[in-house]
Image (tube, rainbow, N blue to C red; front, side, top):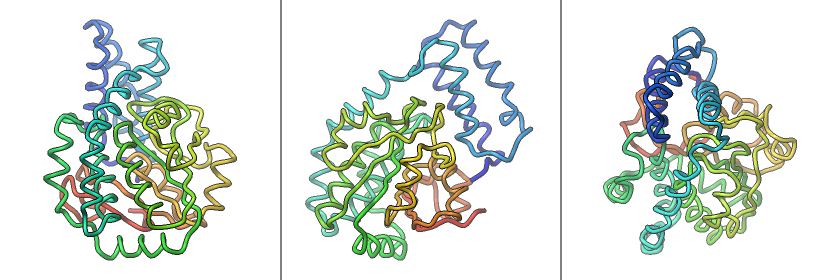
Length: 296
C-alpha cells in the first residue's frame, strides 16, 4: 500500500516517540527532527512509495545522529522479555481453546499491536488480548487459510516486531501440531525500529519451531521488498507452497509485489489506522487475515 495523507503524521509521531527513547539533549533532538522533516515523503512531495520506504530514511538519520546501527537494541530485548513472561498465559489460552489454530492466529495478529507506530505499545498488551480475543476473524478468510495449510508442506513466514515474534512462535507451534509443515521464518538483516533480527528471533526460541533466515535487505527497511532480498529468499518465495506476511510494514511493501507472486500469500495484521480500516472495511484495532491482495 502506498502512503496516504494519514501516514505522514503517523510517521512523524513515530519519529518523535523514537527520538524520546534515545534520551537526547534538546539541541540534538531538535536538529534530528528538523532533518527528518526535510524528507520529501513527509512533506507531501512524493506519494509513489510505501511507509517503510520513508521510515528507512528516518532510521538512517536516527542511527547516524547517535552513531549506532541498532539504537533500539535494549528496547527490543525488553519487549521480548516482557512478552515471554506472559507466554504461559498465551499458551494456556490456545490449549484450552475449542479451536486452537484460530485462537493462536488471532493472538499472533493481536501481538502486532507491539509497534513503534502505536504509542501505547506493550503496556497493556495482556489486557488488550483479553479484550479482543472474542473478536472474530473473517470466517471465509480463515477457512481458506486453514484449507491451504492442510495441503502444503513448505511455509515461508515473514516476521515483524520484537515481542510480537513470541506470539508468532506460539502460532507456528500450533500449526505444526496440526500439520506436517516445514516453516522458514524470515527476519530483518539490518536493525530497524523494534523489528526482529536473527539475534532476537533466536533469543525467543523461534529456531525451536522454524528455520530462521535473514531477508538480505541492505538497509533498515521495516518491510519486505523482494527485489532487495537475498537470492535465497527470492528462491524460497517461488518454491514455498504458502507465504505468511505479518504486520503492517510487510503488508505495505510486499503487498505492492503480491499480484506478481507465483505463490499464494496470506496477510496477517492489526487494523491500526484509517487507511487499513477503509481498505479492509473493518474497525480500528481489529485482527485481519486476508488471502491475497488487490491493490487499492
